[in-house]
Image (tube, rainbow, N blue to C red; front, side, top):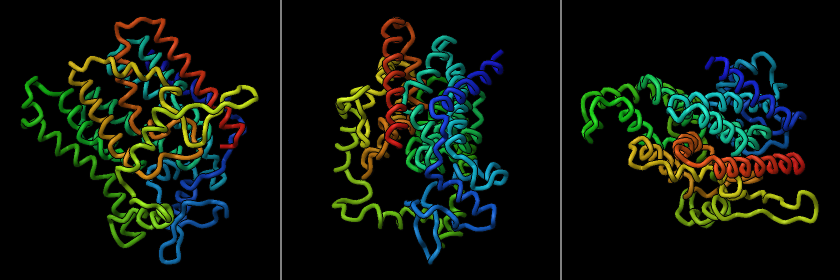
Length: 390
């Protein structure tokens, strides 16, 4: 029955995403051209549309500065369909798969069937996942792939706890968006806690924890090794991801560096305080391309704050969330041409578990109100995203 339910969630969410944007825009798909290059024995790209930006040129060859996981996933599909592959539809499929994995994770976290179902609906339609899935450009697919592997890592943490699998899944999340690497200590400590044989603080330092640490590192070494090899082969330096060259473009005219505390206020403003813009046409509320407050797009996630912090699982999920945020808010860029605050997605797999835990023993009326408000807000974002051609 659970397998049937998981398949139904995957198909149902994917079809609803498709119904939200059946035109399937296929504007920016850098990852497809990277996968095509690999299939033709190249590490540099060619044949892409002239209006594409965010490439970098090194030694006269054009490369992608984007992390490689999305391109790795695309390889078999590009092998079959070539660069004609519609990455927008691929993004919807990945997002539908993420909704299925979210339900599996919540069931393993033992929040109860009803809250697992509601949490899955919130994850799919009450957050910027909906907008991200139906737009499906290069930047948004990177977020979806990050979610995919973080969900897989957490499913294993709340399941059998095989440390090497957790490390490998988390590593491929890092190869989707590098900033999520900051949460590695939180995820590892959560793994140790969930499978410890004793309850004292020293469970994090005993022989079992050390063994899990070695296996976690072994799993992590596989995707990290792929990244290091790609960097060495492309740029002659295993630690050069291409962002250094990209910085020459992105940081032009900026007073501060790539990471600086001066950027924190702009992130907090967008993520917490940025409101709707009023327009004199239906539906009268319009989002700014800079973003929109999480409190307006997904207020139902506030339930994460009422999850019992006496539970070590809750504390460690919050640690992972805070560490992820710590890698984002000093960043010079808060996103652009987006609905909501898309960087939320890098921490959403932790937050959705916290929110589902916070729903326990709470009244259904306020919960359903906030869930419906979140879904309507994101439906409005989907409407404007299509109308404005985002």
